[in-house]
Image 1 (cartoon, rainbow, N blue to C red):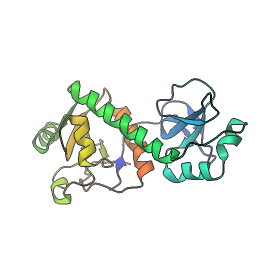
Image 2: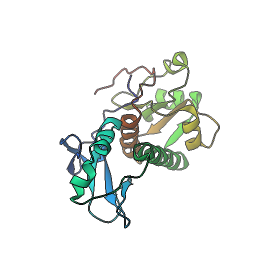
Image 3: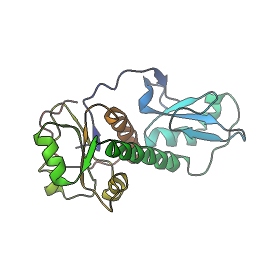
Image 4: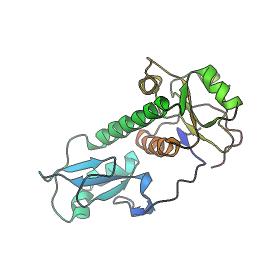
Length: 209
């Protein structure tokens, strides 16, 4: 199973063209970049920084192409400088944003962590999204199924999930429908693209791609 699978309708919202691939796609699947006052390219993960923006698909390969071929100068129609480690910084910022969203969902009661709590939510059909750590036991993860017509996230480590839930480590978590769930799935898909990992052995009965 991939690290972030989804059956939610994430197609709404404006489309943007990727600087690296030339493909037009919904904005939530791309990363926005702007030019700072010093002429250096800045990743705008939240999409709120002032100035003209260009977009690159949230995939490591696409970003590496944009950097290597100096596509940002072409996109901004001016010479710009690239900070060292821009691609890795984009991944770190997306991870930080995803952990923040999960933490907010937990504090609002829309997310739970721990095998028994997740199992309970799944049995009561309260869960919309199943989240499992990349480095969790495959045998343990296979005991829980992705909610019917729900989504699966498997691109976070146990330590990273733990940060979101205020614990040392978390292997299993779940999100209720509504609230922040759509935004969490969107960020997880961006992180998955940046990581190129295939994590998770959760079963997917009822999952639709």
